Image (cartoon, rainbow, N blue to C red; front, side):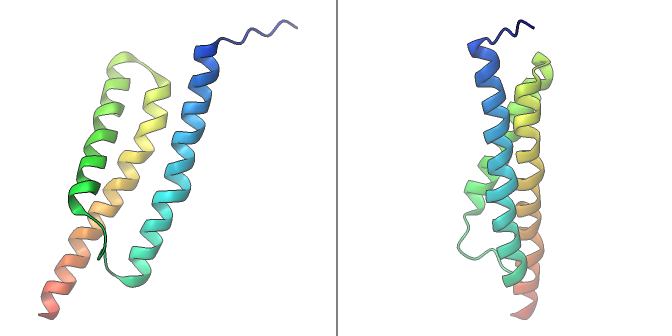
Length: 99
């Protein structure tokens, strides 16, 4: 059995793996903290919005290029940052209702 490994293939696998890992550990932890506190205090709405747009653009670019590395590596970021942006919206409404 002759297995051929290219540098681009190896880097692609690592890119998908670590890209998904950060979105499966880091962002969900932030979502859980926000949910427990029922607040997004301390988070930057601008930073989360720019992150969402960056993930979205990379995913869209991957779709245009038919590049699964970009698609799988970034689409989860779109979903996870969208959840945080949703938390900004619902927790802001709750805090404004208390005033």
